[in-house]
Image (cartoon, rainbow, N blue to C red; front, side, top):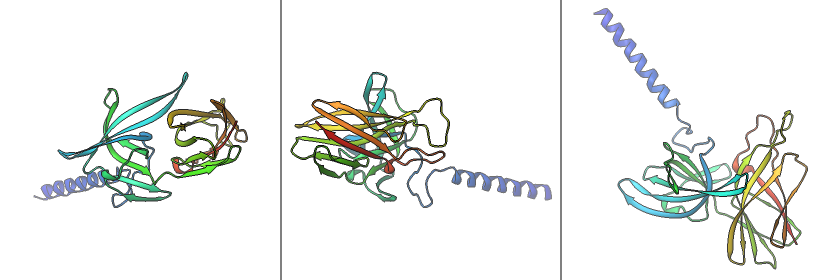
Length: 250
């Protein structure tokens, strides 16, 4: 009888340990807060399709600009959002829970996948969580003036039918300060240019040295830019901290 009691007590201990481990394995903050790990996908919502059936709230089409050796390409993902999928709106360090119905075309979205991506065109995935950046702002500037844009913000050029939006950070491999690197690295960002009602995507790439600006030509305009902050050793740059310093001139 004593042996049975000891075995039962050990079984209870192991069960409680397993339960504690399962509780600690989540990346969420206490009380069901938002995920703070790096997302699987960062891009712009191109369409929203409500469903409201079989536990599925709907789908969103997310477009992400990806740098390639030949320039850039746009990857498209159809992301399924279930009724119980957490959706957040982020404003700085603040997160507000929102409904699927509040997702809108043009929002900058960060998506965490639940399970593998299904190979198709567009690619398909289920969302574990979606976080969108709070509203996009447009700043009006003149040719030759520098503007600082956060992800999701736009610059409208006075007297020109031209607007540029900082859509996303495609990749950042710049060699951090106080680190010796074989390659200086580079940072690539995706922008959306609306010119006379026509919209196209473009990537801007800046090499590692942090004090230099880079340039790129678009039709008769010259884009002079720099991406901040510069990476520091063992410091993670969050998406909301990135700034695109941009000057547009003829």
